[in-house]
Length: 150
Image 1: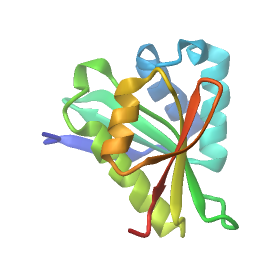
Image 2 (image 1 turned 120 degrees about the horizontal axis):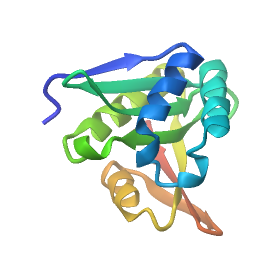
Image 3 (image 1 turned 90 degrees about the vertical axis):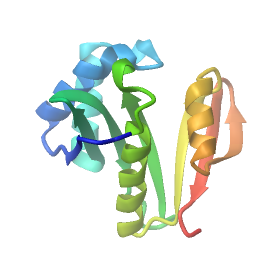
Image 4 (image 1 turned 45 degrees about the vertical axis):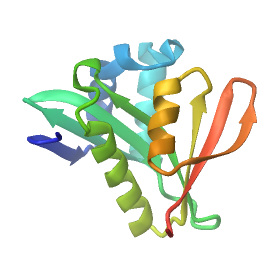
């Protein structure tokens, strides 16, 4: 399903911002779909995180942004995984998640956590299918975790 998908680590905040802008209409939370927030997130991902884009048919298909830098708790944090609507269901999300998990393991992380809106049922099913378990709930957010040692 994910034939001809190119995954690439993006290392400049301008490129990160460009990819995020391209995918911005696919954000579940449209409140972050504004130039200031996207620029701020791009700078943060560039400085502290890892950002991997996926391209298919020479089009941006999606991205994953995550942190694998908590050397004390050895816990990575998946910040965003976005798949362009036209490429959903093609295995690209699974490919991005695999790359996130691989990088977290290489960085010494033993768990991977994330926060997801409780109304984002499609994302919740995706994460559960990929081994994430709910660890807590606060307001409209679910917090999920995956053990990377299994």
